[in-house]
Picture (tube, rainbow, N blue to C red):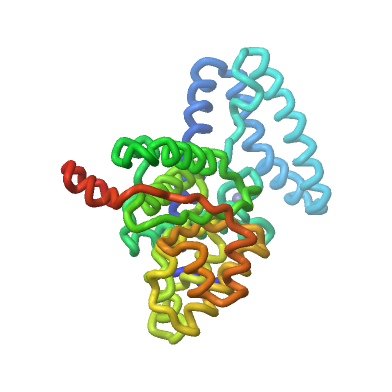
Length: 325
Ligand SMILES: [Zn+2]
């Protein structure tokens, strides 16, 4: 999967920051021990120096490298056990002088046995989606901004329940979440606003969200497909934790867009990765607009949530709000 250079750079910078943070914390703790517990500090220095001392000693005598390594490990383990016991006795917690890496698996290097560690591929995913979302300049909102008083009385309770339901969906989202959502309703009933709240909540919880309008998504896919762009939208669409397609049905429909839509739906659903689609189309209109395979995927795999009320964008403007919905 080819990620752009900026995405790779950003992911590697974060790895370096993680490494530095872990190292700095260790150095701070070591400094404290050096001042307060000189005997433990001494022991820590021993642990750090053992490797060099012993390897020089053993190899200097023409010893067997494997045997040297075994002895060093044994020696180190003994010193470390002693050190941990002392730290515990002094009330520091036995891992006080352990470097706490964000990812203990690769020690924040991003690689394990020459292969990319999962923490690194997660970072690539995160920055690829971030780059994509920033290119699309989507403004994210939070659930606190949602107010039902902009809706007519007849739908206030229903919309309040919808907000709660979707807030719950966002807050309880996990890697095991496979439920896809379909937000249905007329223009300006708040679907994009609520989608952006979901995107924000998930992003804050560390999930990778790709959020784009159907129009923009198909335009990008088409440009990439015909070699007119060197970005990789499809990679982000396939790998992100939640794919949000806003305003499905507003795209200029062609054979290409229909095939692309089916592939995206099919691939994500088969891989148990959820989508959130918002549309102004009714179920009947979806059936009319798309082929049977797409319609049955949407009908069978999505939970519909119906948005109601008049165009709240007009109301918001009249009330002088500048919320971008
Ligand atoms: Zn890792």
